[in-house]
Amino acid sequence: MKRWLAAIPVAVLLIFSVLAANQLMNPEKGDFERVLRDAPGTTFETMDGQKIQFAPSPTGGAVAVNLFASWCGPCEAEHKYIMALSEAHPGQVFGVLYKDKISAGQEFLDRLGNPYTQVALDPDGQGGLEFGLTGVPETFVISPAGDIILHIDGPLNESSAKKIGEALESAPPN
Image 1: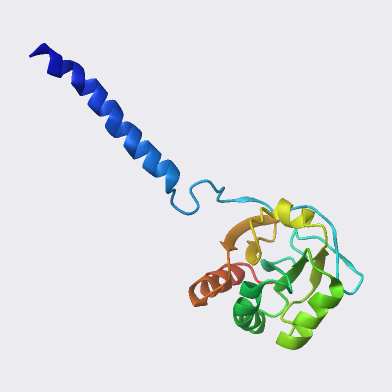
Image 2: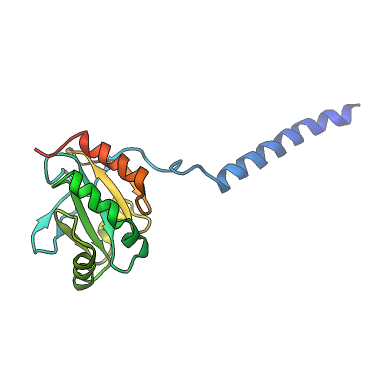
């Protein structure tokens, strides 16, 4: 009778281990992500030779920053949503050309349309790393103070574009 009492702690430990392993192997999206963090203070050169920073916001209001590349298929697929955001929120949508040649990025924008107020260049990918980029495309909404208030990883869809629009409306440009 006393032997089965010794099995109880072992069974509890086994159940806990299985649950913990399951959680580690299948975390909910965003479990390991900070909700609010600073946008990088990096100064980017733009396609037109100017300089731009995203912390604090370059417009004085909330801005969306979309990291994209001409070689990225999902970037092309999401482009219609970026165009719609730019039309609905003029002056609030910026692009970062990630690890790409200026000529290829310009060709991409000439072919699909340029929704961006300005396009920053990130030829070595360091700026993307400072944003917290895990892979293009990704879109970040930055508050007037320079905090990342929304991060959409992967290509935009109707739902994520709506979230970005709502975040941009929270602090329009001056």
